[in-house]
Length: 467
Image (cartoon, rainbow, N blue to C red; front, side, top):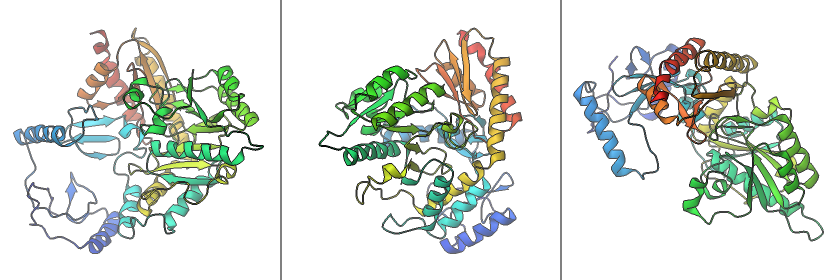
């Protein structure tokens, strides 16, 4: 079997299959463990047929030049919204990533809590290849089977009666904002002005589009784009009394809260706090929205993070892990909320297309199994135990917190040098909070051996905190 490498001129010097022919072969390849035309380190992968020629792999100086070229080209061509790390990633397998030089990284970032099944999951890949060969996109003018099947899975497994599909977390929160406003307008009686304002909390993150941005607490995110949506009050996360008093005034359309804050620093809500919000919202007719974009779909060891509390929202927003790396977002709603929404009130061209929904079905069907969720809980407990044993005694480590496989290491110094040193040692982790929290959100398939490897690297890198 020839190994195909894409060269800059993209000329054809390798037989190319027609799309239907290729994907027919690809489906067979999944079953027999082979792939037409491409093989990496003895493990077959499935890739669409491109106009490529056969070239020797880059080595040595050529690879270094490639890294430099990619970084320079990115700087010239892309809008400068990302402060990227000087690593050019090329491929992934399980919980491992590899850069263009072949260096291996243990991935505890999972694409910012997206790749719940790791990289290259066979069932996910099979679903994507088969659906891509059949039907990828139709718009929402028509009915498609994968979309309805995914909606049924989500409704059957949650508090919700209906769902709305979007393409990202911020889009899901935008939809929830609109649904809350429309619901309040539809239910206002006796000439009363509908509630139009919102409550969000300190350290929260709900997205970067203007509505979701207005609900995001970090001032530096909001200030460059003001004026943004008015009517948002930020309260201290966990301050049930302040929230209850404001909700009782009758002007709040919805309360947005993350049961576990990811970007904010891995802070978990208490049951008393969420129950107080639920009670106050019920009394005032305010909607309660749980943002589980990062903490939902198995990451805590529960399918939905709020299940651990036994408290349920009127709406829940999802995104990151659901389609295994393809763009998707969802708003799950009760019938009471859905009844306020009419044709044309909201929409999306791409949302819920057959390709992304087929991918999401593959992810959901794996993660939702009780044994899988139980394994996440067990691995999370083991991970925190090891972290406390190895790192807990360090003078710079203030706290190790989290649930399941969303874990934060709170430091009394900036976390970036530590994160950089971990990366240099082959471990990918993230920052959170005010830059002082190390955020750990690995693929949910991580093994105990990989957890031990990660903790060893974290321990060996601790000395950086003293510099």
